[in-house]
Image (cartoon, rainbow, N blue to C red):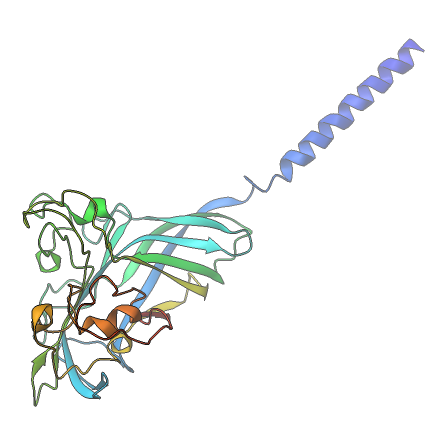
Length: 308
C-alpha cells in the first residue's frame, strides 16, 4: 500500500507540472509580443492635387479662388496604435534622428524651399519608429492616432537651446505662446487680389508679461487635438494632409479687418474672424477667441487629415 501511495503521488506531481507548463505556454500576455518597425506616410495635397511649392491650385475656399501655398509644416506628437478588439493603446516609439523626431515629437515638412517657399530644402513626410504589440493585434487593419501640436513641456522652451526639430525658427512664435503647430502660408487669387492668407495654429491663454519667456503657468487653451484614423494598414496606408478642406469655409481672396483679423488668415488669436470656420475644421472650438465674429455652424469634426 505504501508503494502504491508513492506511485500515485509521483503521478499527481507530474500531472500538476504538465498543467502548469501548459498554462504558462498559453499565457497571451507575454507570448508572441515583438517590436515591429513602422513608417507612417503622409501626403500633402490641396483639394484634388498633390502639393508642390510654387504651384497654383484652383477652386480653393468659399470663393473658389486660385491659391498658392509657400509654406507647409506642422508638429505632431504622441503617435500610437489603438487596438479596438482589446481597447489597449500601444505607443509608437519614435526613431531619434536628431533632425525631425525628438522624444515623442515629429515635425512634418512638405515644402522644399523651391518656387517661393520658405523653409529648407530638406523634407520629412513620415513618422518612423517601432511599436511593440502582441501578434493578436492586426496592424493591417487597426486605428492609428496622433496629437496635432506640441506638449507644453516641448512648446515653451528657448529656441536657442532647443534640439531639432524644436529649433526651427520659422515655426517659432513668441516664446510665451510657443511654436506654430501648423504653418501653412499662402496667397489667395494671386493674379487679382493677391491676398496673403495664412493658417497658424498655436496655444492661447498663456499667462505672463514677457513674450520672450515661458508662460507663468499653463496655457488655458492648448489648442492641441487628437486625430484617429481607423481601418489603417501600417504597412501601406497613407495619411492625406489637405488644408484645402480646412479652408473651404473661407474666401482666401479677402481678409477680415480690425483687431487680430487685420493679420492675414487665421492666427488662432482672440477676435480673428478668419478662424471662425477654420478652427472647427481642425477639430477645435473657437469659443475662446470669439468677440465680434459669428459662430460657425460646421460640426463634422476635423478635415485636415484623412486616410488616402
